[in-house]
Amino acid sequence: MDFDYCFECKKNTDIVIDHRQGDRVCTECGLVLEACGIDETAEWRNFNDDNNDKDPNRVGSVMSPLLNHGNQLVTLISNPHKIADHSGDVLFSKRLHNPDTNLVKGLDIIASMADSLGLVATIKNRADEIYVKVEEHKLCRGKKLNAILAACLFIACRESKLSRTLKELSTVADGVKVKEINKAIEVIKKQLEVHMGGVATVELVRRFCSNLGMKNQGVVAVQEAVTNAEEFDIRRTPKSVLAAIIYMITQLSGDKKSLKDISVSAEVAELTIKKSYNDLYPYATRFIPHWYAKEEDIKKLCLL
Image 1 (cartoon, one colour):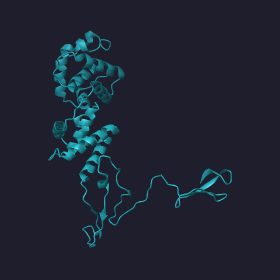
Image 2 (tube, helix red, strand yellow):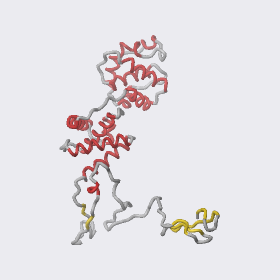
Image 3 (cartoon, rainbow, N blue to C red):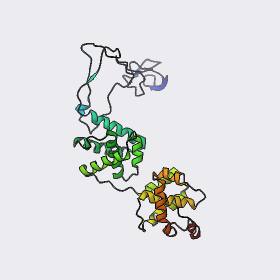
Image 4 (cartoon, helix red, strand yellow):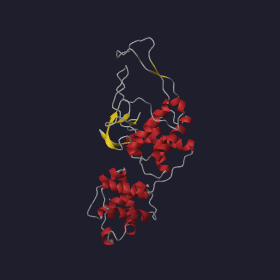
């Protein structure tokens, strides 16, 4: 029972809600204060069909502007011959031909992947747009659907300069190999002429250092060291250089991190980190900030 203002009684009175009719009625004078109200709370009733389907939904999926709205409607037809199937059900349901069925499935998977990676709606929507174009041009035929969808998400992330690695995408794409995602990316880039921007190294620094639980002073030192190291001709990938610098910085602090931990966090092989470390080693005193470590301490670092 709720309290509300009754215009007939001219005061706050007890109100009874008739959930069947949707009416709010004053208990003192019987005045109907609100008629046919809509209950916006969750509905727990199951609308089972003859196939014992436990899905409580009575409506279809959310309408998408990327799809033909007419094709988003589904018609279910009962079996006119009443022939029982292997499960003993007398009726069966048949979905009419819908050319957007595969597209809807792909968009649903993209939404699930984006949610698992914690991506914002703008990136998810951009991935949707790329996938729709892929389907329209019949690209990536013969490739796994999850590899194509992961490729669309990766491109959308890169366009927004957001750091998400292929290995992360492989994980949420039911274990599709990184090589397969890479191939799909190359096909989409070539055919649709999409332009992927580079990921800001600062973004990678924050993510990798956060995964390692590094203190703020160490994170700032890594950022400064990475910027200083750009002056030198180190022919290694940005991720491997960053991983090597993180290892150097942590060795100069009381909170040392192992190569294995850094390898897992940065998704770079330990051997690759060692090679990058050895390439950077001769320049260590020049790119590691002196406010973080003294020059004599930096010189005590050893080759791996």
